Length: 224
Image 1 (cartoon, rainbow, N blue to C red):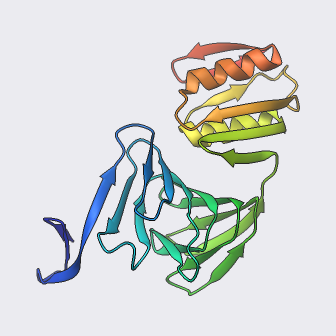
Image 2: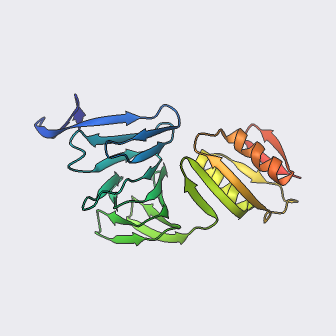
Image 3: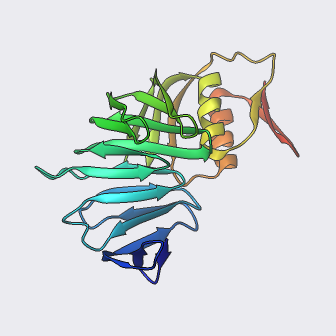
């Protein structure tokens, strides 16, 4: 439990470390005391102690991308639901939009994903994604491709349209679909800023591939 800027036990005994809590009202970039950049999605929250320089741990609720600043001899941990990620210096994305499906995507560097209930450790390599279910502690690893992260932008190279739209729907929790008569393998090359609106992204994709969109109350359809 957290009261008045301190961690408390269930009996109300103060634990020594005070903490700082940051909640993103909109897409924003927050810089931690060690110069690590956290690209936060709206509604996401991070907490860390005021003694962060001695113990680099962050508790994350929601979705954020971390560019961890490397400190020799010092690890960095991000704690999520019943698991944590251990880092030395790298760039990775944490998505917690589904209670039974957390996603950790590694863009560069190396991280170790740890499941608290089982003690299972997964050492991730660049362009890998771990899909984790907190309710049963199951994990699986998938390979990603055609995407890089650079200072606030996702950069795509020849990514198939169907795969791109899947990424957009996960990023924005949206319902964008492709018309059946469309070439779902059309290749898109371009970038998406972390703070771009969904409609700006759809307009960019349509302009790049000479496509059109139809807006409906329950979603967006992309068509020729």
